[in-house]
Every structure is written in C-alpha cells, then in structure tokens.
Amino acid sequence: MNVKARYANGVLTPLEPLDLDEGKEVMLSIEDTETPVHDAPCVGNGPESIVQLFERLRSSVPPDAWDDLPTDLAKNKKHYLYGHPKE
Image (cartoon, rainbow, N blue to C red; front, side, top):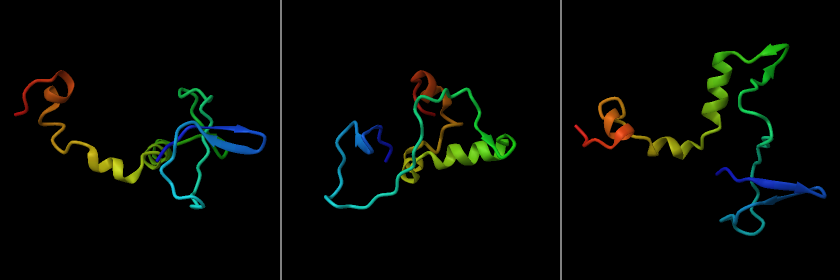
C-alpha cells in the first residue's frame, strides 16, 4: 500500500486512515514527493541505467496491483483507449 505522510517533530503521520492492527510492525520506503519526476536520480557516479529505471518503477508498484491489469490490452487497445466494444 502507498500512503502519503507528513513528517513533523520526528514523527511520520499518515494523511489518510490506515487499515492496520494497533501495534502492527510495517516496512517503510521513504520517497520525497517534492522531487520533480523529470529529474532522473543518479546511481553511483552517473545517471541510472534503463534497467535500473525499470527495476525502480517495477518495485514501486504493489505486487497485487499487477493482477488487476488487463491481459488483452494489445487486442482491445481501442476499448481501453476510446471505449470501443471489446473484440
């Protein structure tokens, strides 16, 4: 799950309610939402490679979200783009 939060006085506060049990331990990944998307992050001494870019983008999508993607996208592109009936 991706949730925006605000950091103040040493505490991260979610900007929306979370469906978690009290005391539940979670893993956080911090991403600055102020960073412009067009600025490519640097890895090591230079810009990230295309492989690193795809890996970063793939890992930013929750694993269960891939199950919701259509499997007939190429065949029914006009349906998904323009609302035409499916073939």
